[in-house]
Image 1 (cartoon, rainbow, N blue to C red):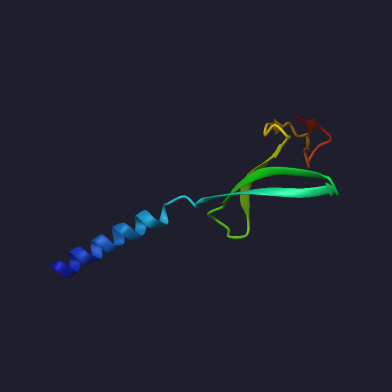
Image 2: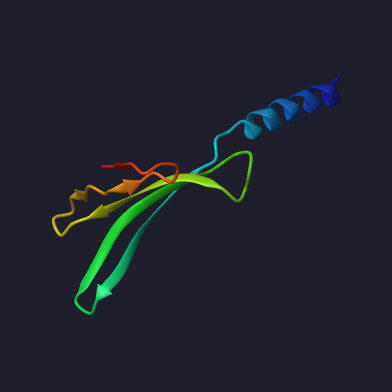
Length: 83
């Protein structure tokens, strides 16, 4: 009876762990554009559960006052530009 209880408990714990969402990864970045100029920002991403080589994420560019700078993004499937 103890072995059966242990097996059921192990199965329940395994199922619970398998259903957890992947962790969100976060970081900051900085790029030099000239000797005295730079760009900086933050990024976050989450690995897609179905694959280990792909992720969804976002990034932000900050100005000198630590405010987010709006970015212009071109859609890869059309000629439109979104702000």
